[in-house]
Amino acid sequence: MRSLRALAAFSLVTLLAVTTPIHSVSAESVKDVEDEINELEKEKSDLESEKEEAKKKKDDSEEKLESNKKEQNNVESEILSIDEELSQTQSNIADKEGEIEATNQEIASLTNEIEELSNRIDELEEDIVDLEERIEQRDALIKDRLRSIQQNGGEIQYLEVIFGAQNFSEFVSRSTAVNRIMDSDRSIMEEQANDKAQLEDDKGELEASKVTVEENKVAVEENKAALEDQHDELLALQDQLDEQISDKETLLADLEIEYDEMEEVKLSAEEEQQLIDAQAAAKQAALESAQSKKDDMEQKEAEEKARAEAEAERKAEEERQAEEARRAAAESEQEAEQQEEESEEQEQESQPAEEESESEDTSSEEETEQQEEESDVDVQVASGASGEVKSEDAAPSNRSGFIRPTSGPTTSPFDPNRVHPIHGDVRPHNGMDFGQAGEADKVIRAAADGVVAYTGSMSGYGNTVMVTHNINGQEYTTLYAHLDSFTVSNGETVSQGDQIAVMGNTGGSTGVHLHFEIHPGGYKNPVDPAGYLN
Image (cartoon, rainbow, N blue to C red; front, side):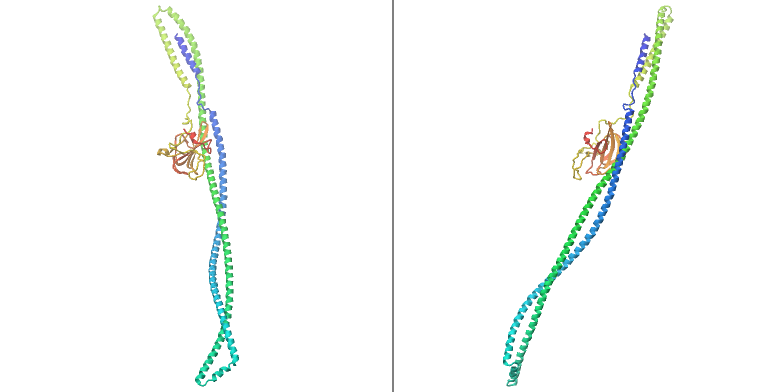
């Protein structure tokens, strides 16, 4: 019976050894890693193409910027030339206005002179009327005197009057009276002559004054009209120059706006190129990691293969030993039966023989126990071989998605039609904003395991960190913007929850906050992060 128990134990050991499975090193095969490497190589090649496109875009922008700058310089030169012409025109306008003022003063003076001449003409006309009346009266008086003299014999009558004096006193009186009469006649004649001469002079002066007044009026009006025409021409020229300058300034402003836009395109292209370089570095790091992982898996597969071969040899040896044990057990059973029969015959004959038989049984039991112990050891070894060997590479800490990058509250959701708080126009809000309720909220953490693709300043975003992730075979890029500072560098591997930055207020920002974006498939594919955060 002991021999049967030993045979059963040995058979159990053999069965366990034969049925023990050999598990692979990891659920992920080398082929999967090779596929991943090939995919990374393809993505790296695509990034090189994108890099060339970004470089071409940057070169085109620089060429357009140079052309725009030359055009700006030409427009500025034209504006300077027009400015000089405008300055000269304004100077000419000022001169003309001075001439107009002088002409106006001259007109005022001539107007006064015309008024004085008009008054003088009125006076002359009155004087002429008086003179004509006096002359007419004198003419009548003179005619009467001449008629009287003619009737009385002329000048002889004066002598008769003088010499008809009776005494000297009367002679003197008569002489004086005659002299007075003669002086009066002479005075009348002289006054008549003077008045006539004055009349002619006054008439001449009157006519001359009238001509002068008319000439002055015509000259003044002509000068005034000419100056007004010149002034109007200069004003029209000034308006034209103002319009030209306005057009040039508008063109210059448009060129400056275009320059700023192209500068922004250039900066965007430079940032895109930097981002592509960073992504390429991240892809290279991921590629090297995958290659290292592949090498480790190949080494582990080789080790596993060696263990499997050793296990197969061990099993063959165990089967051989089992066969030998089976044969030995059969022989031992035969011998035991013979010995039992002999023992029963000799039981009463020899006590030492019985003791010897018991000693053999004890020895047989010890051998059986030893075999059972060895069997237990083999079972334990086989059981240990059946367990799965885990890969040294740890799995991502959050297979279900992303965690919130900060403990701060949500202040602004994803909104493609949001009115920009600074510019006031509708611009897509391609992420979520998180505010700061406490000091701890300023700590910014990686939303998932990944590789840092970009750190630096981006227009509008300020200090920015971008991280690439590969979750369940899907590539993502997360963006963290308006940072005060960052604690990671390009190409650095981060784990979910690692601190990567500090919340800030850089770039186009109205206060301390974090702007967070998620881009499935790579940057420039923004989605609402709310549906991805755990």
